[in-house]
Length: 320
Image (cartoon, rainbow, N blue to C red; front, side, top):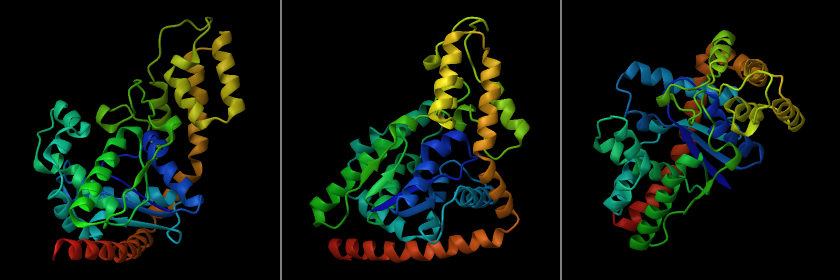
């Protein structure tokens, strides 16, 4: 089956990005799904207005994909902007999308509540996202739990289009791993750059340890038992540890005699070990930017080929 998803080039890559998205992408590739994975630089334009920064962050996301093991021979890795056909499909979809559907989208309401000035790009974001998905005849869309609504919106838009013009578009399904759908940040809220609570993956060892040692915990004394299921440190620890390590750590929590500082140190060691190979690979990629550019150009060509096929179906169906 064809899986499609993307990542915005919006800043430093963190643990939440990995478990909420990137790991799923690599797992799907390794399960022999046909993966179409893109860098959502059109979407990033709603927040980034510095062209040099946008280009830098776009290449950085490509390097992250490759560092974690995405194989450009088995999956299609490309820049969203290398497939301009998606913007034409966005207009076709806009013409069948009810305003009320967009007004109910939580991402728009959340950003406005954070003080972000609303514009049409932010409001119509779900329609472009729908076009991203539908233009490749995607079957599965791996997303975090918080993005499930956008896939549901995509399904609604595809059904509206098909009702108007015939069975033209594939209606996709969301693909969510519930156990890692929401990764806690250092303050206990969902890990997000907008909250400033992330644990970076590609910063220095010192910077990563500092963020982990700053995880918010309660004031339970060292000698007292602690509840692992109510601890931010343990919630992160179990993402990296194997089942035996997780069980042993949970027992240490319940037995008492271990402070949160010790748990944080063990978490830091696990995090650095877990990402060691990816961090080394990214350093290699940073030294060879031409390889990254070649991968993106080849992926863009493959993506455009499929996009042109689907767009032509839509043009024919709508009378163009």
